[in-house]
Image 1 (cartoon, one colour):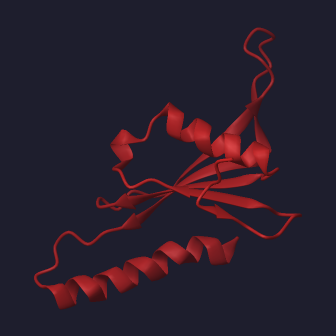
Image 2: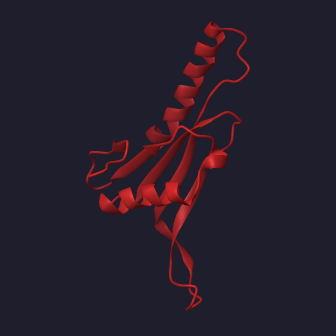
Length: 117
């Protein structure tokens, strides 16, 4: 069986996270479907797609829809969400020490989204 990179231990509020080491422009349908499959397999309402980020893009929340186009009743669900969350990689560090310092700040900011949830 294939598993995501992270499965929370909380059975009542399960979270799934999967990391891809590619830029945001290379994130495609197969990547989203993989995380959604993990979410449904492990009965999770929240999923995260984690990736390296260099441009400072904000998180993007993608809500699962319900209904069908055929019946013209498509609406977003309010209980199943996949969030694209990037780890900002410093691109303008003048030396290794500066990179390490900036990276520690990025790691702290990256983790805040999980502390809030």
